[in-house]
Image (cartoon, rainbow, N blue to C red; front, side):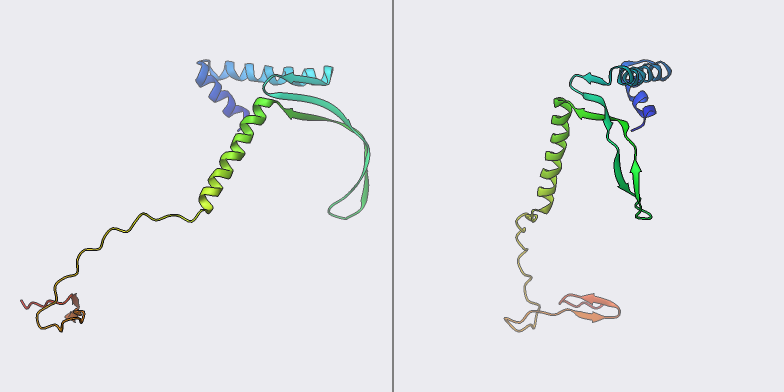
Length: 148
């Protein structure tokens, strides 16, 4: 989902114009970034905690050439989801597991409907011998023949 889509959904829900909603959403994002820069941490209840941490310098490997490279220390933003978010995401996992379990179960077909009683034997058929149809002039007739 993009910021534009978020703005559209929120504006439809609360009845503001998309322009005004976009301004509010952008101000919210700006406030989060400003707080991270100044305070290094922002906690949003039932959502999560954003925090600025220093990642130490380290040795890495260039995946293309395989050469060792030095990576300098740098600041990164980390996010730890809140309890409410964790709970809702976990419910997604559990629902997906239930759907996968249901899909992997062999499907139980409903009981077969009783077959119609067999047709009476055609005249001249031998008792106990199934009657066979005939193929005549490009059409199949099942047991009884009639001439036009």
